[in-house]
Image 1 (cartoon, rainbow, N blue to C red):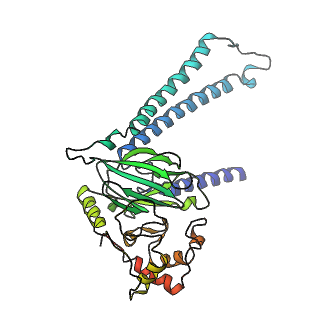
Image 2: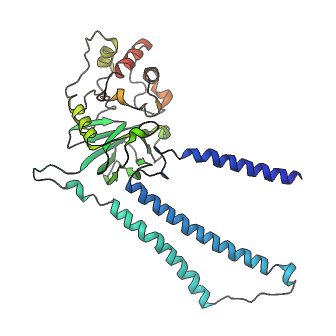
Image 3: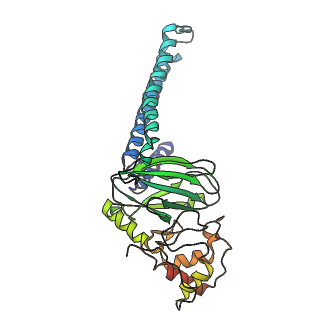
Length: 355
């Protein structure tokens, strides 16, 4: 009786876990709910592989159970020796050819898709005026944040990638310090960012992110890179082409923005004296900054990639960044009072190109 109850308890536990795990498939971060053709094709290959593996497991299990039931001693007796098939050329051909066929079924679409996603020749195509026709983004992964440069538009941002929907977006991927990996689960990927070489690929974003729970897709670092690897997130805002062009124009309009060290606003003055050396507040420029570009800080979804986007959490981060992201390069850089940190946080919340 007790054994039966224990089995039912285990079954109940597994059922409850299944219910909870089913909630993990959020649209903004689930690779099982693709929002673009790259992610969809990768999911199709994954499903094909699962089907093939499931078929193999079923066939092997059936053969094993059949042999187990047919030749058990209680049925055939103690001294019965089943017919031996050792050295059978027919069987050897079967169990050699079938795995080869199954591997080809998996390998052909996988290799085809791999070469297809690696085709970035369109990055260099230009129109009659010599302007590149495809959107290219230079991605630089750093400890523990992301920088996004739009070379043709002459703008740069960080922590939030903004892209248009319905067209291929090409990426140049590199790392500034150690190996990282660029991955947007719901869209496609992933691909390593290396210090030594440049990796290239493309993604296509078919859904606007404003309908999602948090208004963004989530991106992750998928390569163990240090103590705060799990917190190295970025967000992706997808807009229609008209809205994207408006965002680019708003970013260009920030050219020349600087904080005034003599401002009557304590936050702006403190930022100018303590933070401006590492953090720009103009979206016009190139990559290579020491710290994240803060031009669009007020438009962000999170602080430091994972904290709630509030002035309070921003002040907490400024006071002790090492507490939240161990190993980040901002730790120990600034020595401001709690009052100044709060004032800086309030100032940063005003930095916006979307409001």
